[in-house]
Length: 140
Image (cartoon, rainbow, N blue to C red; front, top):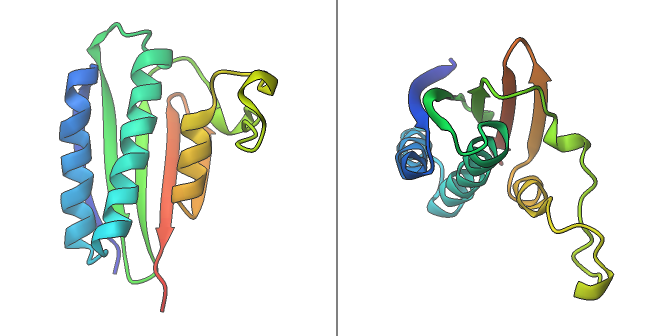
């Protein structure tokens, strides 16, 4: 049976720690191991930072980020919902981690790259708001 827990944070950088703590607790409640829970927290930290810095332009005092954690025996999912302009971060080309520093054409994109590395599935959808979901599948 699917379990779900929700919270909201203001769209300010100083509230990201609360988002990470919420996801950590939900991951623990879902029975994820410490390493997997930490990956979920890192992914949320990075995604929330992107929303606040790029979507809300560091002016999110009157805006929120909805955070939903859903889990069952197959997977643990985190959905972040925000009111920034429509933006699919997955359409951005990933930086090449093997390229020399002077050969890299972009300074950004690393956060999404790391989220893709840490999570099993990442999905974006525009539904009048930005919906960004990240999934860790359970093994076994």
